[in-house]
Length: 274
Picture (cartoon, rainbow, N blue to C red):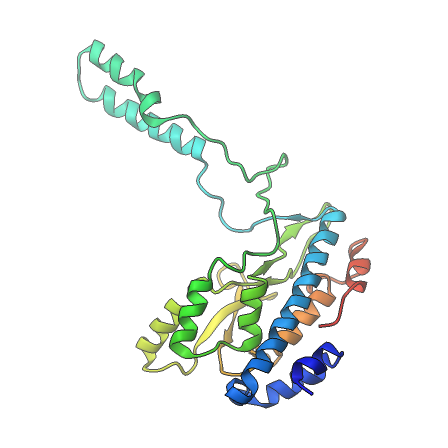
């Protein structure tokens, strides 16, 4: 019986244990298609869990909020540009009529101001979804695999099926700790090429992938080694698929106790095995 058939029959953990035991041989021709099918099936199930968690968190009032620096507000940028332009015109020493004409033309030249569209009424910078577009950075993943061979199958399937995950957000009167964050392959191939050039080979190549619950603002992510095989392994020894299972069992907030937020335990209890 194939690994995929056994996985679909419910041997989720056993199949992954056996695929990991193959090491780099999981990428050999005799195993690759079957192992990749298992990885794809796993990440489809993971995606279903993540989508359900996202909907459940929204239902209890959770707001997915970005922690990245806010973009330059177009209205403020235009105001600053207009002020600088006015100062330049006034400093030219032109006759009053010409100065007045140039000042009057600034609105037409610069265009109207535009408001910031990603803030809600409370001024929070919100995101439409906690899940990322799996097609957005596939050029980097495809180029990496042409250069280095298949990425760890679980990780490659995650990127191609889910894209990325960021459960950063807020909930009234609750401090949120340790949300699930899994990064996309934004510069994967570029980083790989730079690593090979700097080190004379790909040994030790790692990518910043998961949020570090104990990290600070200057180093918020954990670098995960990219090695050949069915699964990727975090520096603490946990496998990527197991990490993802644990985070989804915790309703996307592994840094929180499920009884710390009303309704969170119910979201966690609906977990579907993968």
